[in-house]
Image (tube, rainbow over all chains, first blue to last red; front, side, top):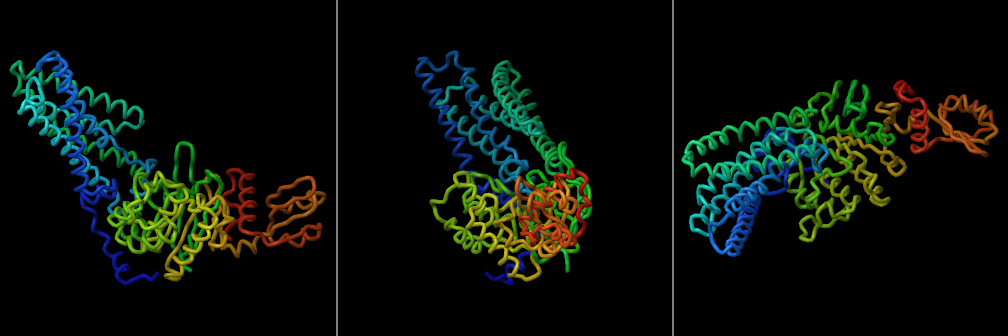
Length: 238
Length: 304
């Protein structure tokens, strides 16, 4: 095996750090396109399950709007949280498989930061797909949600909120504490969705909704930044 | 002779372990082995040198000018391979290639394919390729080696590359080291760790012995073999020989130990047989001595 001039020259091309999509592929092995399709597919499949479940439940109960409103909403919200959790809570420490390799790749910590941002985008996309499907189904009366499309909107803002809290939970050092706290957080956020949706009917729709959207808009970048800085301090530079 | 790495007072502190003030030179153009028992600090030293773990203090100078392991050029020059789980375990050979192509500027896919075939892993493009977690430990290590050797690096740093390989694969690994070094004679360096040097002796030019987080001896293998002698004799002579031995193991009928070559004449006078030790025998003797000395052995032996 001989060294070609071309290969030697490649050494000089070392300041071209990976893009967000490339960073995601370096860490997960998934191509961005495949990642988006997979995310959307998982979201659609999860949603399909919810539709079938709620449909079956309604069939069993004999009428659409029975006492199962809370259950329906919890199911919808919990499904979305469960979809978002694995990506949000995935850790890349030295002790996890690939953890040492990732520290040697082009771009170093910057590549990690980009991968995390890409993974967040992927999660938000999955949530969007899930709730767009839910809203569509609610509008077509396939999903008998008590507040229809607004229930989906509430679910979406709360799942995004849960992702933000999940980012902060990643700063917890002990694995078992981190997973327990994050799971509880996401479940509470789902239940919160139900409460907020209930409050829509009491006339406080606009206020609550605006507060939640603003909170999400602040929390997501802030929590992402907190998580990245914490990771750098306690894992990367340690 | 130039050095690939000059380590000066490198320290890494953990709650329960300290890699203490390592000062060593890794000669350029040779294969250097870090030899030590489990827990001696080999992995910590390797990880710290490759920027995988942050150092607590001290410095390392690479190729005479570079000190920052975050330097993109230096990252490209170093090929790092950990002892286990180098890649996520749900990856296949193809995934490793795709990720490595993006992760490094000097990854050669064609070379990777050739290496995979040579290491009996098959063609990475084959659809039936298993995921890493379904492979044996030996095959996983072969995959890691193919990935790191497929890069055009100047320094290979491998943590226990041979421990999970069968004898034939170890032989091939030695061959690959030789090819890597001779491809660009004098420009490339291999640094690998091992706790069992016997199978890698053929591939080792320079050895550094570690115990309790410190280096205790170092030198070119040929120089070490001149510096030390292997001594053995009857059990009745052990008490006379012992003061001249650095370390010794005995049973009811015989004893064996190592000593400085300067003691050869004296020991021969005690009816002891004196031989040139193998690297494996040297390792056992030196590490046993280090173990006996406990933690106050950082000045043992001096530079070889």
